Length: 136
Image (cartoon, rainbow, N blue to C red; front, side, top):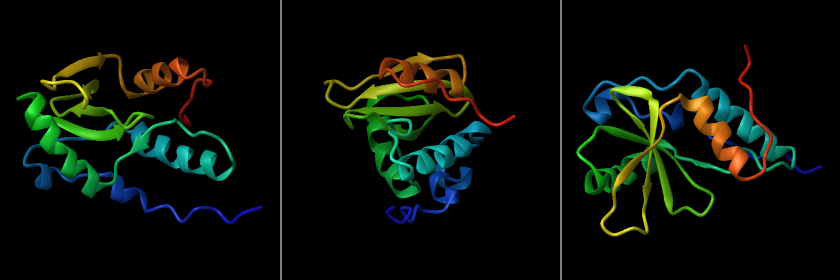
């Protein structure tokens, strides 16, 4: 069996509010889902089929956010084809927006207002993956 991938520490998936320039709190299930994703991939699974963004990638992708909307959005993942950028709304992290990076002009569209876990499970369902449940 191959050795597990040396994943970055979970803190690398967080952009601090002082770096963003505005207050933001990640949903509590966010880091747990990344940890599960990494473990599932190490075990040969597909994880969540999202490319979770590390801090430097999220900061780079803020340029797309600024082109697509005046809303304060925080990028957290790319879709499986890398053309979709998923973002939390800073004012309400239960709102998840998507920006289609291939669309001109780019626009941020609300894709879920029911919370992060609901968004994640809708995304997984569209790929015929089973629902994910956070630890209680």
